[in-house]
Image 1 (tube, rainbow, N blue to C red):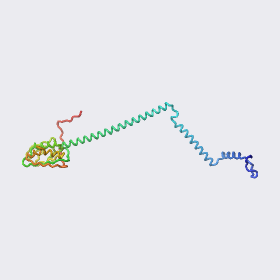
Image 2: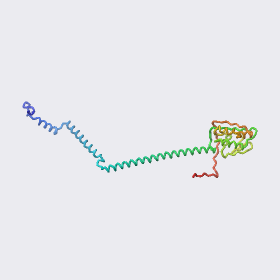
Image 3: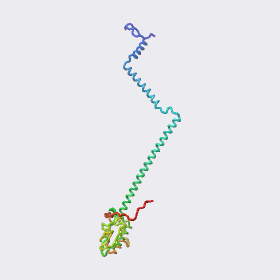
Image 4: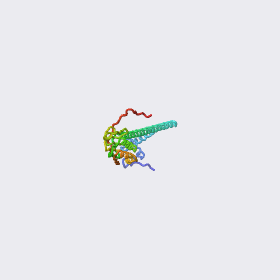
Length: 258
């Protein structure tokens, strides 16, 4: 089969084989590339460069690729030890936190208990005004005078019935050291002259206090024997405002607990 040729004599050019034409085109493309060919070549060069860099990076990041088996075992052992130390430190910190919380709670409870005890002692010592349910006893002399011993026995009976606070005639706070003395025109209570009628306010369980006043041969009977009339009224709330000044002990000293 005859080889294809370029246009014949009628075209004004000498005939050129097709193969020569292809090589000529390739030569011209290499010597004078078009703009599109340059762009394609640059893109191919960039892709090749990126591939080479990626391969090199992977090879560089493969830190343990050249390690021996024993080296890998040592690395794993070190990591395990670091993990154990971290867990131990976490446990220590959590324990310290729990102890701090526990100490704080214990201190708070101790403070609350101390405050409650101080309040109770202040009430019993008559150092603060108080309010609460209780009874009001009104003692009116009718045919005779109320004796100091009778009043003291009544106070003792009310204490046995768990009276928490008492005052007489709104001026004298009755405490453990309160004294009663017979005097002309009435009674001297803790150095203060009082006269009938005597009004005794008592804070505590109203039913228990009223019962203590009415027991057989109790305070009411003793007061009636002295010629007095006794009225007992239960109250859901009453105020005791009289207070005493604190007294420093002269002989007693606190002892440190062993």
